Length: 112
Image (cartoon, rainbow, N blue to C red):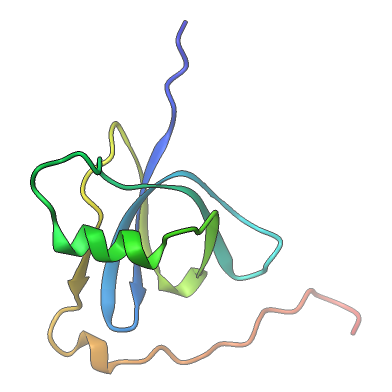
């Protein structure tokens, strides 16, 4: 029985844009309020057609072993059959003007 490797598509908001990236691992780190993404996957460099958006993402995440995205910035995480093209797209008109109100971290019940 062959074990297939998991691939995740992660969409999150960063500086008024929606990032869509692919990774081999997603989890909850020791940093409260963040999602850990590791094993970033980008398209083959031997491809004849070059996508400028994907090249920009490759350059931005060059040398990154794992990245931590704030939980409130994550839009969606999907487990997919195979990786697609990583991309950056602008938010819908007017959506970039709304900033989420910072919420304090919940405290455990009882005690200080």
